[in-house]
Length: 382
Ligand SMILES: Cc1ncc(COP(=O)(O)O)c(C=O)c1O
Image (cartoon, rainbow, N blue to C red; front, side, top):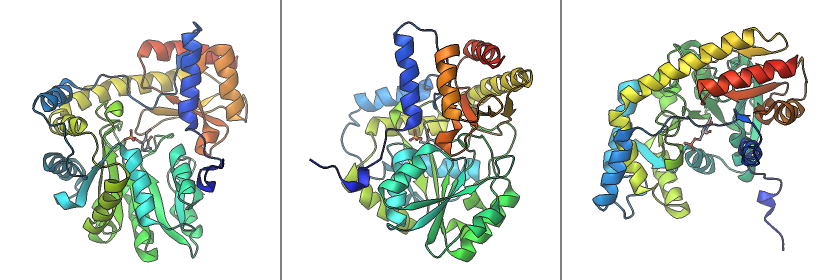
């Protein structure tokens, strides 16, 4: 029996696969430091957990409106106004089972098969696969030496079928964050060429001094054709709760809600209650998490400064360190496999992000793990 042609060639997310391999080696008793994780090693804040327990006890266990219950949509809208200079009414906001689901639904709602969407690279692995399943063609636009978008290169890549841009700042895997100046140029291009902008801002609260700017905050013209995507996973240590959100023009939110009503319905009612409390009450959690992440980042940059064969790129945001390993091995998959087998450190090959010769290390793990990993990597490179 045949599977659909749509699904041919689609593999499980390669970052998840490597994570699983590292976990299997650990289960066999091997010593592995796993730096592949895309999630924080902090517990979900108590305020969110307590709200979830209360929701269960109070019977918030039935379907909610597909877009999420009003209290949560209001909490998202007020967070966006307070922290991101983005003013949306609650019918311009909806919630999803993670930002990943939101991104997929948006692509289905905004683009037709055969349409092209510009994706600056390096880029998170799922954009490409989501597009391919929907018959959308990703057009990759390399970023500059510091991994910032190159608006001229993006303009040059626009053709008659280009319908959108996928922007990700702070970026996974590089941690690059876009400046107001380049976002303004990109916004002007998007408006001139009538392109949708999907702005994946899932890491927006995790920045090391560089201010996060949402492209949608740069004027009414660009806001009208931008959908901002975010969620609780990364900034509130709530990956398993699956709670994402998006904000954009009411007619887009209405269409995505209709799609979601048939595809999956509302995100978990319990997770909605937890996320609302998280968005409203967890600023101290975010602050202390950022302090810890900044210390780990500083440690890694200093430690890699002493490893001659490698070059680490200082991330402006998110919790990943992108490292040039091309002097050891130009093939990042071979490097990652060999490092895992011989040094017991799991990293993600840059090839998966369309940037070979580099690997991604997650510093969402303890300082003790990072110290051990750096020592193993330095010894391996010798
Ligand atoms: C760039 C990027 N966007 C979106 C997501 C999805 O996050 P969520 O857990 O909200 O689905 C991730 C998760 O790794 C990510 O790295």
